[in-house]
Image: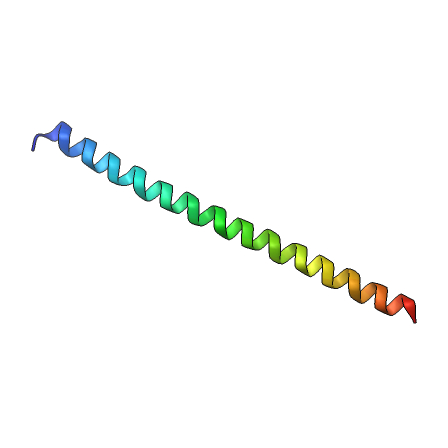
Length: 53
């Protein structure tokens, strides 16, 4: 295998790894946003509960 073909193969592998990392990052970001939204909802429910008394 010549150097150019080897470099293309390495580039393709790096591109695949990058795609996987980007997908994982998107999943983590989505999970974090859902968790934050859930916490805000819980805080709102606690505030409503305290002020209804």
